Image (cartoon, rainbow, N blue to C red; front, top):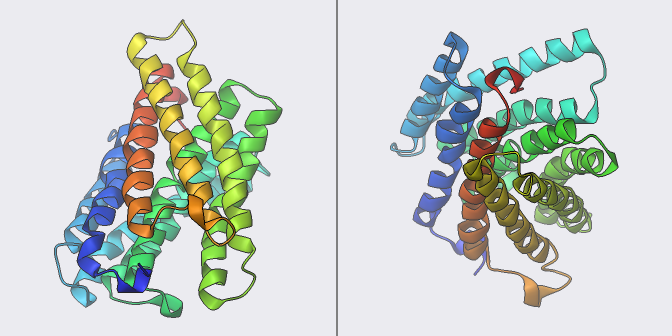
Length: 283
């Protein structure tokens, strides 16, 4: 079924998965210990409320505080980069985890305003917002954490591949939409999948470390296995024009791939890392 033929109501599950990140994953990781995080959470709640309204100016205004909150985070990251200079790969990934959701927030505002940038289907606008709130948050975050915990070639490679792959996938989808540079999407997906598979192996490796509690180890194992499965599906979908027999349909992708990323990899991974590092060690 073509994406454009999907009714907008079919995106309800996508909306729910998208909201998992600002309403659950980010607060779980960053906490609610200071006023800035409390304001961010209030903005996230307002943004979630915007999905209860019909798309238009009112819904966009409710989503706007979340975009403003994420832009303030981008400003903080930019100031830190200016003071500290060029960051190491692990730190760059942690910065990306703070910056990428701002791009997703802009796409949320566009979706709630019923804007269709460059003629994209509303569902694609929503999926882009979800991409930058999940692949753009948990994936670089955990790549950076693994690179700091186990410095080496492969963890640095996963950081570089994810920093390149997350935006490349979005650019590739745009190129495919306009019918130009069609190789960019499969190339971007391949780069992102390679980086993510490295993170999946690192997460599983953490789960095999006996000095950790059993619950933390289980969280790492589920997180790594979920990411591995999700990336195999993503690779098949990204190569759908080359090897169509291995690709899921779009509804299957956002249902299965999205659930694995949000709950299996994201939620279990963040809970595991909360058990593995102290509050002061969280970026």
